[in-house]
Image (cartoon, rainbow, N blue to C red; front, side, top):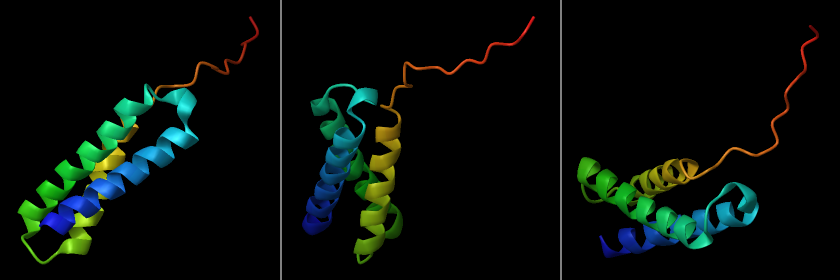
Length: 89
């Protein structure tokens, strides 16, 4: 259980770091992104571990990755550039 928690926290942190580095203009503060990624991964690991039971470490880590990615997607803001087509009158 300790290794699952540590592994999921590292997965969430790595995913959050990659997201913050790749899309800095669409995300809020970097600390919020890192905290959301890590916390989401821990919550995802907990839910997956409770659903499957012990002994399913790879599946638990996949669940942690999925929840972390889903929570980080909620932080994305739309870009300011909207491509509007002008319709002739």
